[in-house]
Length: 264
Figure 1: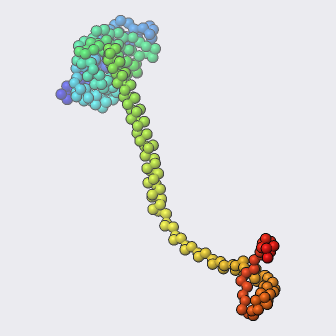
Figure 2: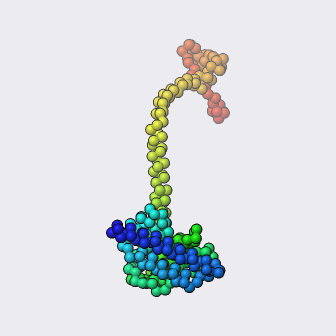
């Protein structure tokens, strides 16, 4: 299989070289940039169809190996074309044949060959661009554009929409869970901070309330303030009762109401 792949790479390079010489000769005979003579256009279409047929004849494993070999040979455009075919081969199926082909010259002086090809599962538009460099033409890029039905396009659009909405909802749920965990994070930080802080010192014992001396009774205050009056009353009582004054003790003096004095 490796020998077949190498032969294919060599064949592609030879095909491009031969095509370049032929195209350059035809280019010199062209009077205007945007016009191609039928012979050159037909030749470009033929070479492009052969190239498409050869690329589509490989299995996925063989195409991957061919792509690697082409990249080693610095044939980037051909390698990208093989890689593009690998990406769509599952959707297109096996190659059947070319339906139509057309070659034009665009404003950038690139030869553009468009081939409408039939495959087992669907039709495909194959487009290859050739550039003119140092009086030689070389493939610049290749594209495969399978034709999908309206139902298939709607299905893909719905899947893409669902996938996008699903990703958005997953992210929102993740953010809500993250925000709800903030309070637990705060509690954990508080516990860690309390562990790092030193323990508070023991509270000083409460001082005993100062003992307030009881104030002397109002009666004693009255006696102390009215010593002369007490002495007079004591003497009067002792004289009336014919009792020595030493045996009498006046403990309190109260003012009698006016009604009692009127009854006396």
